[in-house]
Image (cartoon, rainbow, N blue to C red; front, side, top):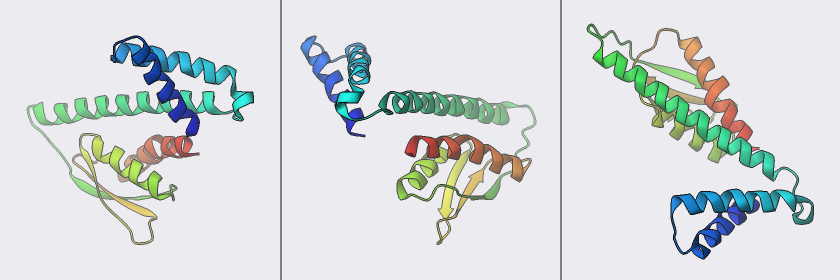
Length: 157
């Protein structure tokens, strides 16, 4: 985590040295500082920072894709001539045990159109999720577990 903060700091310094705090300069600064940190990993005492940044970027692309496909699915469900929705609440068993991991997973589920996290069990092992259109509860659980939850676990390691 400290290398990520260093990466952000160096990106901001780069942008400020360019005389303009714009997204373009921040991204360029992030890439340059990423390369610098990557080349100096041995000196800095970390060997997995480069992999972690790639993992986080992959995670963000995955989340963007999930939100886009969920948005299109909800739009299609609403706009079709004869909408047929099957709202339901599904209990999803959790493999994520950390507080931060549970919060991240819950918020990502709620961020996706058509789904919303309602509650978590008192033992923190089950998440209750509302969905506006459910055909197969097991397929829904598998999608969350093999998609969002798996990626949250990977990023949190």
